[in-house]
Image (spheres, rainbow, N blue to C red):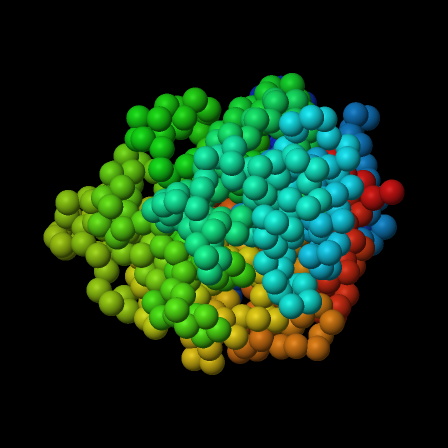
Length: 596
């Protein structure tokens, strides 16, 4: 054993292999079986080290083999040294020179809604209103009396004329069934007359706080309803999906994620969906690591009960931050803006909270030990989120610790230099952070707020984003590089099913800022390097869920989550990155997806 350690160090294989062998040696002395369960060899394996600028970790960035045992990595290094660790029970897998890397960690998904969309009327990529209505008509024929037409994924910004559908459009093709169909972003929906009637929505119904019922020139409801508080009026009368349907939806989305090399997700689905995930875990059918969010608006007592209901250190399924919505989306023009939309001068979007109430709620929940994560698209919404997080950090900070002065970087400073105080690690997050105000990059850094962003949104939004925002405001939109340059942690995800869960679309967007055809470029100064983008999709997203010490790298002690690809994405052209295919996905040392 000592000879092997000496050999690997002399050969430059690094401390990762030596540490792994040391652990194996300690286990052998204890009389335990020490051979790996699985060894992958003859690969071009990116370990994840030295991806971040200034990373001085001495372990190598590349190895050819990795040994796994009991769901974790025990050693990495060269083929000969790794294969020398096997015994008769060890499975060996020849990668035949293929590129492998840490599994992707998608920092923002909606798994159960994505699956239910596929189980209902899936309108993703319908090219026009006419095609959408034809699909609704065909779907209605299959339903029994009184059944709802449910589904979504439509995007009017991709249609000729970009006209929103109306309830009368749906009435003509829904055969009397109540119909409720969400736009791709989930922030507006179209309901037909039967659905509005079931929900008790009339022309006289007042807009709820944080929502809107669209009306025509005569004051009649058009069927378009905007944002969660309004959509909830309809959703409360829709029959809830059964546990079996919830499980099937999660299974469909899980398979989709694994086939795209995603081994971990950070997710916001219904609480009942989380209970279905728990059941799947108990039965051994959950093969994707899930960090589930909880509704910020629930009473604190309910939040405490839910947090206590599941072990916080469960490596497969656990509960994380509290999710709140500051506003809607740019595509629906419901994102809350400080100035009106450039292409809709009477519209400022929809803010979902009063600032004082939001600050109070955030402070109480932070003091109770919760991580906060706020959806914020528009610059006003991002300002609201930062204000609330600043208030929450003041309440949650130890008494002898004060906020860091401007431009002093993230974190805090002590008010008593004679006392060493470890600052509280809040890791608050803003989801999307698509458009920010002047000075916001510095505020993110000062507060230590994570920018959890979805680069693939730009592939769709660049067609109309500048028209929405205008030439000056657009300079602070989808500003990934500016966040990094200000020292802000940047975590990447997809917002699945708003976008495909494929991380390769996000990587392509991050390194090119171009549409998939390569015919349009959007604010190219905000491009990232491929290393920066991979880091945001792995280690930074793990940091965002407090799991950077066990996820995001292929090193001894880390979870054995790995993806094998058909090309080396660190050396591929952007178009090659976009069209990357997954050959194998490994979670906890087990192959959970293998390409046909």
